[in-house]
Length: 231
Length: 80
Image (cartoon, rainbow over the protein chains, first blue to last red):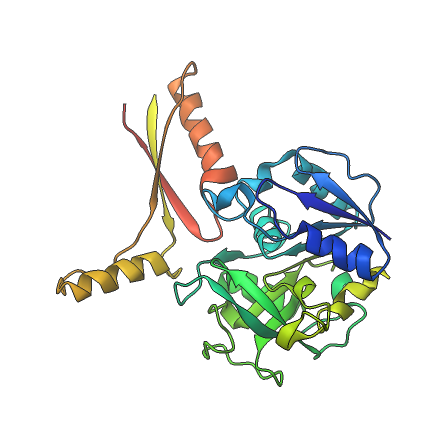
């Protein structure tokens, strides 16, 4: 599989993505500068985490206007796989490729810590090789991670199985009001969603930072299985 | 033409900055002040086009960039 890693000014998780897909799983990766419109024949486009455009205006707002985004829109419309992690998720929501938006964390703090998330749907390319109900423990590092969608959108994404990940306790239990579990106050504890077709996925947590037992801390390598769809 | 665009979170969307400001004010004993909402003012000039076209351009940029319709509302004011 050929994986395109998009780099905006301020992206800082591009190396982590290359490490997991190329270094650990043997896929081929290419970097795609945000001013380029040629996706170089990739099978998967990843929008990594970081602070594109310094988070000016709103997180992801300026990045959605980068030339590469037009190509990504066409690629996604044709069924191409697109993954957005953290800032990448914010960009996909801003671009309208995923439903909802990311607000500031309820606790008004930048959160840099481990969380547990539960796989809620296997109907996305990113969760196609993990079982529904599996729990992944990995870091988050964000100030705007509080997922929001209006009532109608929320009903739609719940009814159509578009919630891909929810924040949960270490055993997989959900509690929308417990700030030790749903740490940023996301509506319905939503940590990640997909589009209707399942070829576009976004999430706030960083499973690519929990792929090595040696340095994975409490998360171990529990994020690794998610990336095996590329192997 | 010079415009001011006021962007703020929609009613019902949690405004954590507003809440933080309100808490700070309450600590200073301004107990009568409530419902603080923090927004953003964007000022811009539109030159060389008709008034109608200028207004339309400001509307368009509000939709594509200045405000996120999922969470924000905007108001356009002509200031000069």
